[in-house]
Image (tube, rainbow, N blue to C red; front, side, top):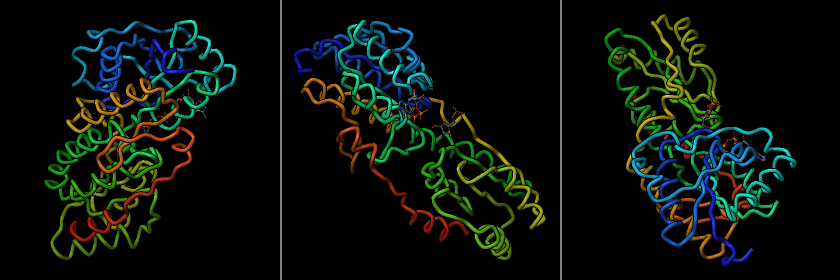
Length: 325
Ligand code: ADP
Ligand code: F6P
């Protein structure tokens, strides 16, 4: 398909929602309309393509959303879309509704879907939206900053009561199989220990003896942060209490980390990425994932993006370990 044949751009959000997705939708819709494209919103992720849950978008459809969490287009995980039959249905729906190219805001599962849809003849652009920051090609994903700030706010509150009772709080943050939320939050809240799935740990060496050592210098309360990919906060709190005798509680922050008004960083990144996605389409460049690299907005071929590998900066754990004592 050539650039001249693209008249209408579709936009959808898919997978777990993330604060800033609305800012990305707003940016896509307004950048596209400004460039003369028509825009359709596909609701409930890939489900909306299969069921035809598609609405016309105009400049005012995205008013009053830049500061809102969630996604006005709703999101979903769609099993049927993982099948070839589902992908063909979705591509047919695009053609039926006149969607010539699709912008998919989501995580790498959603980008796999976009790649499959591209194979069915619908050009796609991916925008990384997930609190987990686990998109290999991008330094940063929409929602990550807000989720960390929410975690920090919650753990600061927890610190008050942990301190009053001379307790140990084991706090579990989200991240699926990645420790990005945990590793920065751990530094920001002064956690004595931060456990992430990327780095194996030894309970005695890394948790119990560290607690006992700091107790000797007068420490009376403890915050232990674990990423969900490491295990359950409740199990760890029980184990710590059994081994140290310190009254311990577990707190799972859960889905609260996925909500709330996006931070400045998430709003700006989402706005820049949405603009870039439309710019690519207007230049006739398709099947790319938009990403950040050293503060710049860049893009990668979807297949290349999906084959990339990202490593976490474990030196952050060393810093936390040196100063949270
Ligand atoms: P995320 O995009 O946040 O990684 P998921 O992994 O749940 O979230 O994927 C979101 C949706 O993308 C899935 O429900 C499915 O519709 C689609 N999807 C995921 N993986 C694939 C795949 N391998 N092939 C086609 N579609 C996929
Ligand atoms: O990918 C975002 C995320 O919130 C992960 O951190 C978490 O593991 C997962 O989604 C939870 O998914 P659900 O919303 O299906 O409970």
